[in-house]
Image 1 (spheres, one colour):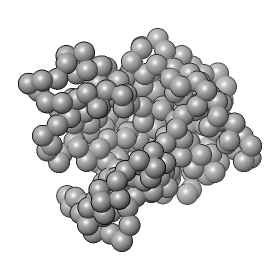
Image 2: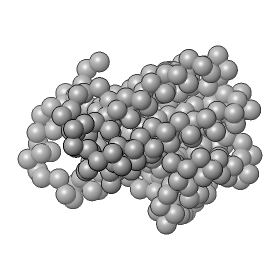
Image 3: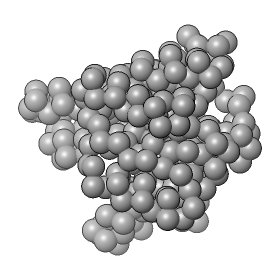
Image 4: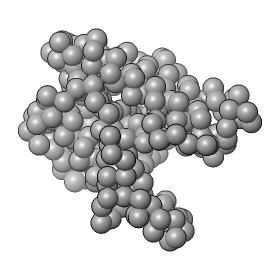
Length: 253
């Protein structure tokens, strides 16, 4: 990718899974990465892996649902590396997803927690990042959304609503600050074979999911991290305000 060398990037939600893989990929492209996560031990591990591989990274514990904590995350990037060029917002409370039932039965605490992390938290990271991006003449914000934002599902109304809100947030930022050099896009992953899914998913479910795609395989973490890097790079500089499916052709939009 062109244009990522020495760029300062925050990955908000990078202790494990897709966020950690994106942090590693961005570092491989030459970016200086702030690995942010509520899971301090996981963030430290990801940062250590990046540094051991010859990249540059620091870990920062933060709570995406807390405004002061988000401010401190941005401050770490500025204090450590001198500014901010791009942000990947990937954090989510997956523990709440299993309790996200339907609008009749859902516990309001689960609804409120999902909104606080998956949507309000993404807004907080955006609002505190944009002023720093503007100081550098612009930059890129990449959100992790989901196909649940448009698919229509009988369960997980809070999760789906927050992901639809993220799509709207990306379009809002692109519309409000695009002329100032800021790009904002959202990625909607399909089923990704994370370690947890590889170990725990029934083979029949994976076979069914593969049949639903227009591809020869299911997704890997590298499919998402490659798109994150592309959208942040100079190669993706004319992409703004978009919701990009990375799902093997499951949904055609």
